[in-house]
Amino acid sequence: MTPEEWLAQDPDPETRAELEAIMDDPGQLAERFGAKLEFGTAGLRGELGAGPNRMNRVTVMRAAAGLAAVLGPGKHVVIGFDARHKSDVFARDTAAVLTGAGLKASIMARHLPTPLLAFAVKELGADAGVMVTASHNPPRDNGYKVYWGDGSQIVPPVDGEISAAIDAVGRVDELPLGDSWQTLGEPIVDAYLKAVTALPLGEARELRIASTALHGVGAELLERAFLTAGFDAPVPVEAQREPDPEFPTVSFPNPEEPGAMDLAFELARKIDADVVLANDPDADRCAVGVPLPGGGFRMLTGDEVGGLLGEYVLTNTSGDVLVATTIVSSTLLGKIAAEYGVRYTETLTGFKWIMRAGEGLVFGYEEALGYSVGSDAGLPVHDKDGISAALTVAAIAAQAKRSGRTLLDLLDDQARRYGLHLTSQLSVRVDDLSLIAGAMARLRAAPPTSLGGRAVESAEDLSEGSAQLPPTDGLRYRLAGDGRIVVRPSGTEPKLKCYLEVVGDSREQAAADLEAIKRDLSAALGL
Image (cartoon, rainbow, N blue to C red):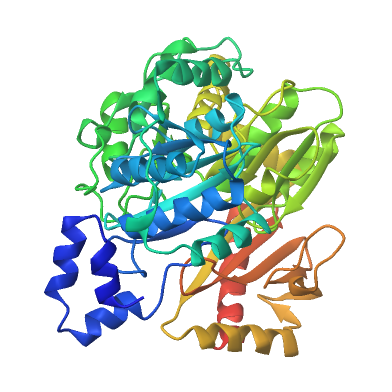
């Protein structure tokens, strides 16, 4: 599509003006028109702006038309949106295209967290869902995430079918547009709150909590969930409580990023908090901070929280249940599952795979702060949910506090029972993607024989697939002493990511082993 063709159909005066201003700039035009945002299993995500390589109304309308073509007339789609720039506009454009194509559309009345959209798809018996969000990406980004009728994110081959249908869409100004969508009010929010507060949360409620929404859309729902469950509402970082698409107090709106939790920890010190909770901007992730015995606070890793939540869920469920995590997360959950005599499985990275792990799934998590917490009744949300995870962490912490203990004490208990599992990451960013392919090829041709003084006992090429996993571009090494490394290209950034785990008796020795492994692995990568 040429810039002139784009201009002729773009319904947005802002992006039309942007494009008109750069029509004589070949470099700017090449950046926007030399490629296009590809629709994949994460839907669409990219920087806002004019052209097919940006998120804008034309891109979104084409995506909606592709989804409509795959679903067909008469199907029902639920649409949610966060508070990022243009999210509400993209949601309405989606509803207009879908209803114009003969589908039924229901749109959230206001910006709400992603987990509520995932819940609503299944609760309402819809055929699909669309969430307009870029999660914890920078302020200039937005995205378009598609869910299927089971309330889970789409996986192949559906993503490919939608992508092909998008490519077949003509001019968006020739698409029939409707206005017959319905607006979903408070009943769907109330239903979500009822479902997540019905999780096993114990009876202890005495807990001081500091929280931050990082300028996202999670604060209201988090506070309502806590009050509904009988807790005091967490004390919010006021400067970050209200949605703001510019994310003015953080350099990057992700609780994992350096500095993002500074204001939350400052508040926690002031109120002498027992726990610090943070949601990312669309509230599908939950970060947890805890006070240290000598003063100060530290973030728990996603694997530490996953181990605590997993064991808590298994303590409160019965029967033939399943727990799941990904190949890059800690192996601790598998040992907990064995202790409780329940089924355990590992999936590829991403909640779209975790939620399809098998029948009887009551808990799933990934190390990147994503958790889905269930009960004997199943999972209230078939996606990661930072609200229900925060509630359950609070229940665990309140129960521990009643006994004079903390989350750190519970982690020590797990280390004594199952071994100390310490995890870390090594990420290498490149400007030339061929460097990543070259590093993977070198590792496949000559796997390392030892890393950090630990022998490499097995090297597995995940691209070959197995009975348990479909093929994926990755390598998995098993190290002596119950260590493990997974190396894979990032699916969203120009990075090679390495996920490391060692199991040891002391935190100091395990940490030293991890650093030694990182040094040797960096040399082996040759980047």
